[in-house]
Image (tube, rainbow, N blue to C red):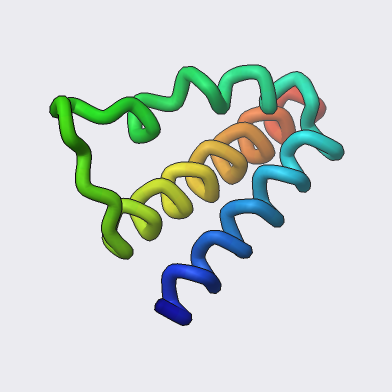
Length: 72
């Protein structure tokens, strides 16, 4: 249970960071395919939280990297 709480906290903090620092990116979070269940009764597990957190991190890293390159 503690791991799930830690992951939830991390997801919330990262989402807040994206919302505050990258509002242009925040609008796409609702469209992230990892958040759309592909079955009628989705099971929420620690691994699904880990996957979602990883996808958020990846999205932000790619965004930051691509915009760094555009500035140079």
